Image (tube, rainbow, N blue to C red; front, side, top):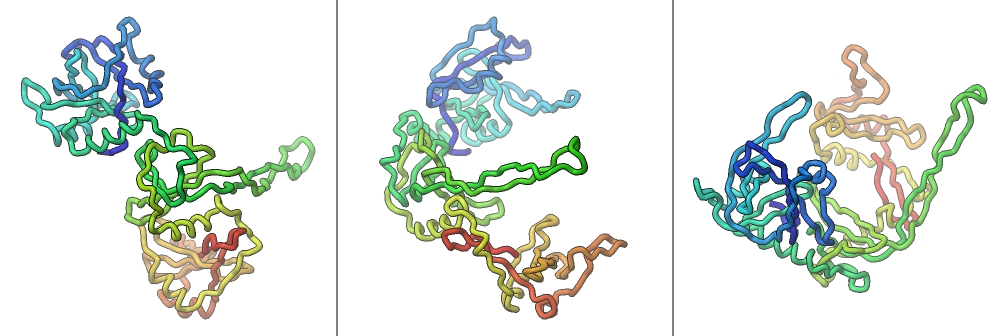
Length: 374
C-alpha cells in the first residue's frame, strides 16, 4: 500500500436508503483535509438523500467491521459498473471499498464468519479513492507518522531551507533543495502575417517566441525511475513554499549534489537556449559504431529505430532499424510494401564513408551543453 495515503482526523457520512443493504442504509463517506476543508463535497451532495441528516465522526481506530457482499461489475448500456465490496461499519451503515482494498485487508487481517474482521481499522484516502486500513498492517506505522506531520502543520519556511538538504513534501515525496534562481521560460506571441488572396479571407498567423525570466523561484530535484528501470531526475520549481513541505528528512548536503547541480545547469528552466552556440560535429567511425551497438530496442514503431543526419546543411537523414539491422533513407519509398528504401544491411563503415553522418550539439546561454541531436 502507498505510504502517502491521507488519514483524516474527521469524516463526514451521507446516506441513501437501500433495501439491498443489511442496515437498509448505504453511506457515502468523505473527509476533512489537513486544512479542515471538506473534500469531494460536490459529488457527495448530489448523491446523498438530503432528508437523512449527515453525521460527522472522529476517524479513530475502530473494530467491528464486517464484510457484506460484492456489488457492481456489470455493463448497463454504455456504462460499466466497477466491482466493489460492501462493508458494514459498526456505527450502523454500509459503505463500499475496491477489490484491491479488500485483498490488502485480507492480507493483513482475519475475517471470521459471523464475527467480521478482526482488529481495528481507520478510514484513509488514496487520491480520490476511499481505503479501509487495518492498523496492524506493516504500512500503517509509516502512513500514520506521515499523517501526524501533515496534521501538525509545521510547514518548512524559506528561512529554514539549506542547499543540498532533503525535505518531505505533503505527498510524502522527498525533494533536494538546490537553491533560489531566476526561472527561465518562453512566451509565445501570435502575429498576423497576411491573408491568402483578398481582404475577406481568413488571416494567416505565425508564432514568435520570446525569452522571459519569471523571477526568483525555489528549485528542488528528486531522482525517480521509469517503469523499465531507467533512472531520471525530476525538477520542481516553486514561487513560494506555502504548505508544500512538512518535514526535514536530512539537513546534511547530499553526496551527489555536484552531479545534481551540473544536471540543473543544463536545464532550460535554469538557463535559456542560445541557438548561436549550436555546432555540427562529424561522427567518428567509432562513435557511429557505438551508436548502433548501444541503442536499446523497445517495442513500438519509434522504439525500433533511430535517425542520423547526413549533412549539417541539407539536414537529410537516414534511419537505422534495430529490428532488421538495416539502414534506410528517408523519402525513398518502395510502393509495393510501403517501406523506406534499404541502403545497407548492417554495414556501418559504408554508411560512414558515403554519407559522412553528423550530430548537433545544442547549448544554453550559460555555455552548458543542453542536448545532443541525432
